[in-house]
Amino acid sequence: MDCCETNDELIPLENAWAQLDQMFSSVVASHKVPLLDALDCILASSVTSPISLPPFDNSAMDGYAFAHESLSKEQGGRLRLVSERLSAGTTPQTPLGIGEVVRIFTGAPLPPGADTVAMQEHCTATDSTVTVPTNIECGTNCRLSGSDIKEGSQVLGHGRRLRPQDLAMAAAMGFDSLEVYRPLRVAVLSTGNELHEPGSRLIDGGIFDANRYALLSLLRWLGCTPIDKGIIRDDLHSITEALREAAEGADVVISSGGMSVGEEDHVKPAITSLGKLAFWRINIKPGKPVGIGEILGKPFIGLPGNPVSAVVTFNLLARPALLRLAGCDDTMPVSFQVKSGFEHSCKGSRREFMRGRLITSSDGNATVEKFRTESSGVLSSLVETDGLIDLGETKEVNIGDLVSFMPFGMLR
Ligand code: AMP
Ligand code: MG
Image (tube, rainbow, N blue to C red; front, top):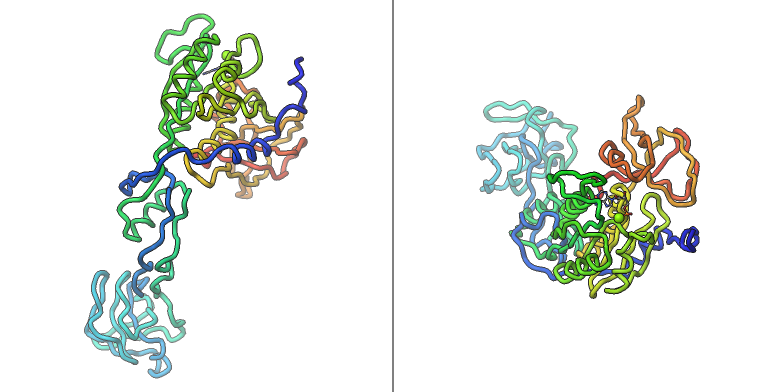
């Protein structure tokens, strides 16, 4: 056992996160893009609304609009129907008087004088009158100007990753383009003489490269531009040259495999010759050998070779680092508490991230089941589950205990 095998030397995850926050900030320039191209991009300047939403008072229902005050003046809610008919996109021509009611449809502007809308289903209409419910509250079914967004208020903040609903909001405010950061270009390479390209013939002792396909697609999920640098042979020279070339053509370099200190692990020495590691080996399971640093002035993230470890460490460490470098403010993985459907006792002192599947128990609540094995070599543990169970400092879990759960779908 070398000196680094003791847990004292493993960095707690929280410390690694704090260090990432210190080390990295946005490295990409911004540009203006058409609204639809901004999906999944990170907003480079905050957006303030030039208008109020809704821009005018309008009806939330098909029905009849009137002044609430009319109900205290007219017996039994029977009001005089005016001839105007207000549908969405029209402009009211005449103010509504006390005792009067006007036909109105969803989205149509309220005429001056009206402050309440009764649903058509609750009214009785004749050719000249409409009887509205007398117990209706003032303001019912009215959407007032600015009730959603006030003119001049900041609606979308700098550093936000844009979701479809954010684009809808930008459109509602009248923007046809947004200032976003250019996507982070991330080079990905796999190391290992045993690795073969899917689609090729598998030879004895060989396996297909799975990690690059996970990492390249995880990067797409994050809105980065992945650059595929392929499989690199396991020798110091090949790895050093591949890392150099990767760093020259990308904003960030990610590798998988070869991060331990065995005779066949050449990534760490290659990094030392091209740059430096800021930290190495985190106190998590799976995924202890993760290195983060820089090569030729570009951020570098070295992930372990086991596919499960590579994916878990990507999500826990590379993801927050990449989001920061890409200009995003909200970088931490989201987790929530779910009832455990399993028992577990941790054997080591590392913080465990087991793979878990959500099931709905008979009482309708979500329960998480752990995968049958914690082995970091079993790729089906990622395929057959919904997310990561974070046991934090807990070492014993019983059925019914609350555990933290990070859904894969929220690591996008
Ligand atoms: P390493 O970290 O290089 O010692 O690799 C640890 C384990 O992960 C070994 O069994 C490797 O064969 C496997 N491995 C490494 N890289 C990949 C990859 N890109 N795809 C699938 N398995 C890998
Ligand atoms: Mg290897």
